Length: 267
Image (cartoon, rainbow, N blue to C red; front, side):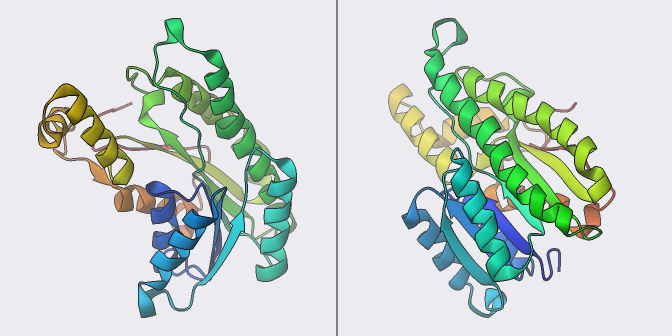
């Protein structure tokens, strides 16, 4: 199986991609899935979703650690608890993010940009540093880190500048980090997610449809018209793309940017 026997940390457990990463990691044979998020209820939901799969995930240990990745002490505690209980860290899936407000650059309240940067860049790197410290001690085994990024850094979308700018900074940091830690057999890659058909997008389209007095189907059709594959990727498909980069099948890949968008953006 793709992640057979691996200890996997997933940061940013939420109703969209975060919980799917945890579930798909368990299905892929992980020995342990460590769910990290600020909200205990979301951690409980992830554990319940994994356990609901029954025999398919029965061998997977599920850990829940309430963590705010903008807090260095909490990041250190998370890594320490995982090592104490599981003995090692094989994979970090950095999914935690702060989107901020939808607003144009010309009139944006830049405090929101600062908050997005604090989570999407500083927080993500804080957690990565703590995990890298452990992975370095695991040489020659090393490990894999996958950053969840966004197509909005590749293709501008109205109102998403603050979020995209912070994710763009994260993408640059990944390239430097990949060069630095490669000698320890630690791989660092990014997946750039496009439109993703799951709870967050569905909720967003419902709100837009009500505001514009149209239907969700009509809005979805407008989006899909720009996607060569003719549909949005699902949360599960995006999660599996990230797991591929985390797996041993990608042992020769680091510093890479994998676009998961059905062909809407082609670099």
